[in-house]
Amino acid sequence: MNHSIHSADRATHLKIVVVALVAGIAVAALGISARVGADYSQTAHVVKATKQITVTSSESSTVR
Image (cartoon, rainbow, N blue to C red; front, side, top):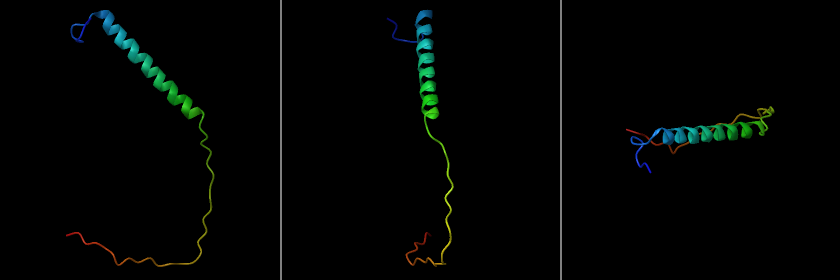
């Protein structure tokens, strides 16, 4: 058993590449399936102005 990537043989490197490739494909497939199943419909909501108000605050902090 090789405990270092530097002393690993060709088969070990190939196994690492294959596992990384399969994991990457699984993550991509999961992301695509999550996006396809989501509902991204957008609706517009109208907000009408009523009367004017004045907002004041006397609790302002001064940074010096």
